[in-house]
Length: 359
Image (cartoon, rainbow, N blue to C red; front, side):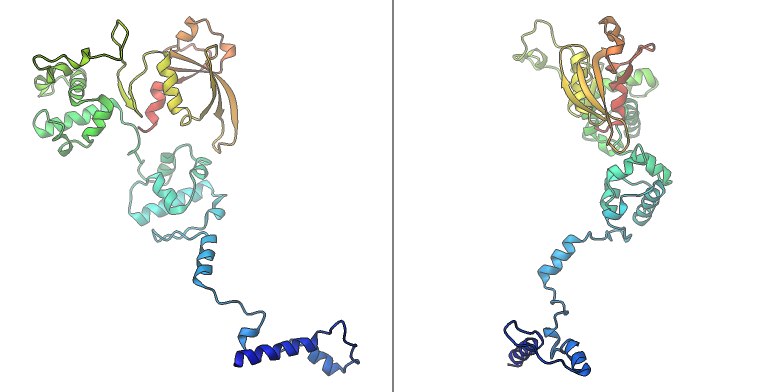
């Protein structure tokens, strides 16, 4: 009842202060009357003032929160929103890494965790640092090496230490108790466990001939899995092959689904297609003529500048000369093995390039 009367009174006050088109103009008022008329009418309740803001509801509050970037307080360090981080300097990034590592109590820091906690993008990092570990080392932390591809020597040396600690040649099931690398790491690199042991024997003969359990290692992988009587060896079952000669494979590589290293030009083409984007290339087209490929290459850290390059694929770099190609018509020679020092063309050796890429 009180609210209805207040609304009625307000309409009456408003109708008296706003002249109608059909009403005759009033006589001039005195100064005091004019000042009173110019003053805004006092409202009987705060609910009736036009300046009062509506009471926020749960829905409006949630929408407001969704429009504003939330501060990241998970680690106890509050960072500004992404919009205010566009012009971060090199020193700013170093300081952020130190803060996050200090709060988490870490001696090193993965890039994914840093991006999640701060909202800083990978592109902003790459404007000032070529690699993530370059930023980590600049901040005084240990390099983050979990995602770096381990060399064969590192894996086999760790396997030797595990055998020595375990007192003999371990089975695949017992290996994780003594080795800092899991058995799946060796399976991805060398294949089945008999192949792992055969590869280890070849390595230990060359690098550690005094290994105490050398005689316990099989001379080849087939000695660990002999075919039972009346069965055909698995390697002779080749219903999918129509070639008269057996297929040959390169050394075990186990890189992103590629089991063996390339042994010809086709393998180089396939491997380059797997890692082209990681190496800063975007393929436009591949043909059968010279040069084999037309692509674009990123030439700045921000990723905004690209250049056109003509690519020729070869298994070994000297094949470029053997095939009679002209250096003036090619920009980059992509090969598996580079052993031509006088090569007049820029060379990308995939064998060494993939060592910097994770599995």
